[in-house]
Image (cartoon, rainbow, N blue to C red; front, side, top):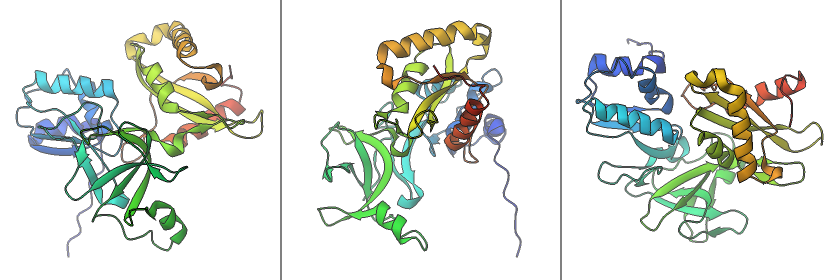
Length: 305
């Protein structure tokens, strides 16, 4: 038998390989599609591209708009479409479609898949446009985690309708048209020492609204001062042409956060970084950021507000 070694994933060569092999159908991640932004001055005709799917993590809205503009300017008739799914759900479970495309959504359920938004505190299914945990029911759900009944019982639960549902751990909502929106991750919610819950996604949205910001990720690190709970730290990537004015930009960002957030919900520090660390599949590596931020705090490089 012949064994062919898998090629190493290289997001930095994504756009180059698309043009080299004139690929028609592509399923990739945000880090791959963002390569079009880096190579926009060398992009040529892309009329052969027909399917442009993005998964594994949510694309930044501004980044996706920029990529779609680059595609359109180079003769591609289609936009990057996002879907949603998990390994536990058998990969993709919903997707946008060329004829059913809703900005900032992950589309509609695939055939035989059912979605609901669930409130774990009340054990009730929520109504349209109410935010809660995304749950999935359908024939592609996993059977169990191998040798881990505790994790299986936490993830796969039978609801009052008698059906087995996958609890994804993601926050979201569904509108009246059945379109699904992912709004965050339950595990990323930052809980302060006094029990107050802080949404990193809300802070990130405010920071990303600054025209000088290219990307942002807010993580929680252990609150040494109170010896429990976490404090939010904002990691900010500025556009290259704005680096010389970083001090003023940070002051503007801090001012905007103060206007839109209560004092108890503000980041404890704003940190400029060259780039956000990624996992092997192109997702932001939150754990690595948490470790790096905590290390900087202990070394007194990162100063709390």
